[in-house]
Image 1: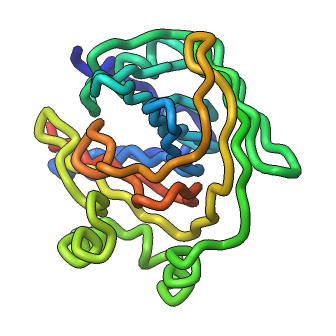
Image 2: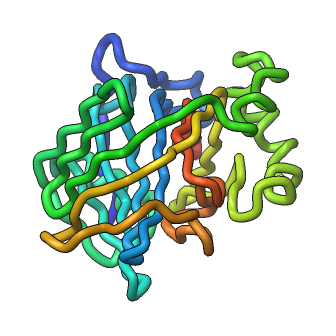
Length: 223
Protein backbone atom coordinates (compact mmCIF):
# COMPACT_ATOMS: atom_id res chain seq x y z
CA UNK A 1 0.00 0.00 0.00
CA UNK A 2 1.45 3.37 -0.97
CA UNK A 3 1.67 6.15 1.60
CA UNK A 4 -1.11 8.73 1.40
CA UNK A 5 0.17 12.23 0.42
CA UNK A 6 0.35 14.45 3.48
CA UNK A 7 -0.14 18.12 4.16
CA UNK A 8 1.74 19.00 7.34
CA UNK A 9 -0.51 20.93 9.69
CA UNK A 10 0.73 24.03 11.55
CA UNK A 11 2.38 23.16 14.84
CA UNK A 12 3.38 19.61 13.85
CA UNK A 13 6.94 18.49 13.49
CA UNK A 14 7.80 18.00 9.84
CA UNK A 15 9.18 20.33 7.23
CA UNK A 16 9.73 20.52 3.51
CA UNK A 17 13.44 20.91 2.78
CA UNK A 18 14.71 23.32 0.10
CA UNK A 19 14.10 22.39 -3.52
CA UNK A 20 15.98 19.31 -4.74
CA UNK A 21 16.63 18.24 -1.12
CA UNK A 22 14.87 15.36 0.65
CA UNK A 23 11.68 15.89 2.62
CA UNK A 24 11.98 15.07 6.33
CA UNK A 25 9.09 13.81 8.43
CA UNK A 26 9.71 13.65 12.17
CA UNK A 27 7.88 11.67 14.83
CA UNK A 28 8.65 12.47 18.49
CA UNK A 29 7.46 10.37 21.38
CA UNK A 30 8.04 7.00 23.03
CA UNK A 31 8.22 3.39 21.87
CA UNK A 32 7.51 0.49 24.22
CA UNK A 33 8.38 -3.11 23.40
CA UNK A 34 7.47 -6.27 25.32
CA UNK A 35 7.11 -10.02 24.88
CA UNK A 36 4.83 -12.39 26.75
CA UNK A 37 4.73 -16.07 27.67
CA UNK A 38 1.70 -16.47 25.38
CA UNK A 39 4.01 -15.77 22.43
CA UNK A 40 2.30 -12.45 21.63
CA UNK A 41 4.86 -9.64 21.31
CA UNK A 42 3.97 -5.99 20.82
CA UNK A 43 5.52 -2.60 20.14
CA UNK A 44 3.55 0.52 21.07
CA UNK A 45 4.36 3.87 19.44
CA UNK A 46 3.08 6.83 21.46
CA UNK A 47 3.69 9.90 19.32
CA UNK A 48 3.28 13.34 20.90
CA UNK A 49 4.25 15.24 17.75
CA UNK A 50 4.14 14.06 14.14
CA UNK A 51 2.86 15.02 10.67
CA UNK A 52 -0.40 13.35 11.79
CA UNK A 53 -0.58 15.11 15.15
CA UNK A 54 -0.55 13.06 18.35
CA UNK A 55 -1.49 9.39 17.99
CA UNK A 56 -0.74 5.87 19.20
CA UNK A 57 -0.24 2.80 17.02
CA UNK A 58 0.60 -0.79 17.90
CA UNK A 59 2.64 -3.44 16.06
CA UNK A 60 1.80 -7.00 17.13
CA UNK A 61 3.67 -10.23 16.33
CA UNK A 62 1.68 -13.41 17.00
CA UNK A 63 3.04 -16.82 18.07
CA UNK A 64 2.91 -18.11 14.47
CA UNK A 65 5.13 -15.23 13.32
CA UNK A 66 2.38 -13.26 11.57
CA UNK A 67 2.18 -9.52 12.18
CA UNK A 68 -0.69 -7.08 12.70
CA UNK A 69 -0.79 -3.29 12.63
CA UNK A 70 -3.35 -1.65 14.91
CA UNK A 71 -3.84 1.94 13.74
CA UNK A 72 -6.16 4.70 14.98
CA UNK A 73 -7.34 5.82 11.53
CA UNK A 74 -7.01 5.12 7.80
CA UNK A 75 -4.40 7.84 7.20
CA UNK A 76 -2.02 6.47 9.82
CA UNK A 77 -2.73 2.91 8.64
CA UNK A 78 -1.80 3.79 5.05
CA UNK A 79 1.43 5.57 5.95
CA UNK A 80 2.67 3.07 8.53
CA UNK A 81 1.81 -0.01 6.45
CA UNK A 82 3.73 1.59 3.58
CA UNK A 83 6.79 1.91 5.83
CA UNK A 84 6.80 -1.41 7.73
CA UNK A 85 5.79 -5.00 6.91
CA UNK A 86 2.49 -6.45 8.17
CA UNK A 87 0.33 -9.42 7.29
CA UNK A 88 -2.83 -7.62 8.43
CA UNK A 89 -3.91 -4.07 9.19
CA UNK A 90 -6.80 -3.11 11.49
CA UNK A 91 -8.15 0.36 12.25
CA UNK A 92 -9.35 0.37 15.86
CA UNK A 93 -9.93 2.78 18.70
CA UNK A 94 -6.68 3.08 20.67
CA UNK A 95 -6.23 4.52 24.14
CA UNK A 96 -2.83 4.64 25.85
CA UNK A 97 -3.05 6.11 29.35
CA UNK A 98 -0.01 6.78 31.49
CA UNK A 99 -0.39 5.71 35.12
CA UNK A 100 1.71 5.74 38.29
CA UNK A 101 2.81 2.17 37.46
CA UNK A 102 3.35 2.65 33.73
CA UNK A 103 0.80 2.30 30.93
CA UNK A 104 -2.78 1.12 30.42
CA UNK A 105 -3.37 0.20 26.77
CA UNK A 106 -6.71 -0.52 25.07
CA UNK A 107 -6.26 -1.21 21.35
CA UNK A 108 -9.03 -3.36 19.90
CA UNK A 109 -8.01 -7.01 20.43
CA UNK A 110 -5.04 -6.01 22.62
CA UNK A 111 -5.67 -4.88 26.18
CA UNK A 112 -2.59 -4.58 28.38
CA UNK A 113 -1.25 -3.15 31.61
CA UNK A 114 2.48 -2.47 31.53
CA UNK A 115 4.65 -1.64 34.54
CA UNK A 116 7.61 0.67 33.87
CA UNK A 117 10.54 0.86 36.26
CA UNK A 118 13.75 2.82 36.68
CA UNK A 119 16.08 4.09 34.00
CA UNK A 120 17.76 1.15 32.28
CA UNK A 121 21.44 0.50 31.54
CA UNK A 122 20.78 1.68 27.98
CA UNK A 123 19.20 4.85 29.36
CA UNK A 124 22.29 5.56 31.47
CA UNK A 125 24.57 5.06 28.49
CA UNK A 126 22.47 7.42 26.35
CA UNK A 127 23.05 10.27 28.81
CA UNK A 128 26.59 10.80 27.51
CA UNK A 129 25.33 11.90 24.08
CA UNK A 130 23.74 15.38 23.82
CA UNK A 131 20.16 15.10 22.57
CA UNK A 132 20.77 17.41 19.62
CA UNK A 133 23.44 15.01 18.37
CA UNK A 134 21.53 11.84 19.28
CA UNK A 135 18.66 12.92 16.97
CA UNK A 136 20.83 13.94 13.99
CA UNK A 137 20.46 11.56 11.01
CA UNK A 138 24.14 11.94 10.10
CA UNK A 139 25.23 10.79 13.58
CA UNK A 140 22.71 7.94 13.45
CA UNK A 141 24.12 6.80 10.10
CA UNK A 142 27.66 6.69 11.49
CA UNK A 143 26.82 4.79 14.69
CA UNK A 144 24.41 2.27 13.12
CA UNK A 145 27.00 -0.53 12.72
CA UNK A 146 28.09 -0.09 16.35
CA UNK A 147 24.48 -0.03 17.61
CA UNK A 148 23.77 -3.33 15.83
CA UNK A 149 26.78 -4.96 17.52
CA UNK A 150 26.05 -3.61 20.99
CA UNK A 151 22.27 -4.22 20.87
CA UNK A 152 21.64 -7.22 18.56
CA UNK A 153 18.53 -6.76 16.42
CA UNK A 154 18.48 -3.01 16.95
CA UNK A 155 19.69 -0.32 14.57
CA UNK A 156 19.66 3.44 14.14
CA UNK A 157 19.50 3.80 10.33
CA UNK A 158 17.93 1.79 7.52
CA UNK A 159 15.42 1.66 4.71
CA UNK A 160 11.78 2.72 5.03
CA UNK A 161 10.82 1.48 1.55
CA UNK A 162 10.07 3.40 -1.65
CA UNK A 163 13.53 5.01 -1.67
CA UNK A 164 13.09 6.46 1.82
CA UNK A 165 15.55 6.28 4.72
CA UNK A 166 14.60 6.05 8.40
CA UNK A 167 16.59 7.04 11.50
CA UNK A 168 15.92 6.29 15.17
CA UNK A 169 17.33 8.87 17.59
CA UNK A 170 16.89 7.37 21.07
CA UNK A 171 17.53 9.78 23.96
CA UNK A 172 16.26 7.88 27.02
CA UNK A 173 15.17 4.43 28.19
CA UNK A 174 13.36 2.88 31.15
CA UNK A 175 12.89 -0.80 31.98
CA UNK A 176 9.57 -2.56 31.46
CA UNK A 177 9.13 -4.74 34.56
CA UNK A 178 5.78 -6.50 34.11
CA UNK A 179 2.93 -7.01 31.67
CA UNK A 180 -0.57 -8.43 31.93
CA UNK A 181 -3.64 -8.39 29.73
CA UNK A 182 -5.26 -10.19 26.81
CA UNK A 183 -5.02 -10.65 23.06
CA UNK A 184 -8.38 -11.49 21.44
CA UNK A 185 -9.66 -12.42 24.90
CA UNK A 186 -6.82 -14.85 25.69
CA UNK A 187 -4.34 -14.07 28.53
CA UNK A 188 -0.96 -12.66 27.53
CA UNK A 189 0.81 -14.34 30.43
CA UNK A 190 3.98 -12.92 31.98
CA UNK A 191 6.61 -10.59 30.57
CA UNK A 192 9.38 -12.10 28.41
CA UNK A 193 12.31 -10.65 26.41
CA UNK A 194 11.97 -9.67 22.74
CA UNK A 195 14.04 -12.65 21.66
CA UNK A 196 14.34 -13.30 18.78
CA UNK A 197 13.94 -9.69 17.56
CA UNK A 198 10.58 -8.63 16.17
CA UNK A 199 10.49 -8.30 12.37
CA UNK A 200 8.43 -5.28 11.33
CA UNK A 201 11.16 -3.22 9.69
CA UNK A 202 14.93 -2.80 9.47
CA UNK A 203 15.42 -2.89 13.26
CA UNK A 204 13.90 -4.26 16.45
CA UNK A 205 13.84 -2.94 20.00
CA UNK A 206 16.41 -4.16 22.54
CA UNK A 207 16.02 -7.74 23.77
CA UNK A 208 15.34 -6.49 27.31
CA UNK A 209 11.79 -4.97 27.35
CA UNK A 210 12.00 -1.19 27.58
CA UNK A 211 10.24 2.05 26.80
CA UNK A 212 12.44 4.54 24.97
CA UNK A 213 12.22 8.25 24.25
CA UNK A 214 12.80 8.63 20.53
CA UNK A 215 12.70 10.93 17.54
CA UNK A 216 12.14 9.02 14.30
CA UNK A 217 13.10 10.81 11.10
CA UNK A 218 11.99 9.58 7.68
CA UNK A 219 13.80 11.21 4.75
CA UNK A 220 11.98 11.00 1.46
CA UNK A 221 13.69 11.49 -1.92
CA UNK A 222 13.53 14.89 -3.56
CA UNK A 223 10.82 15.25 -6.19
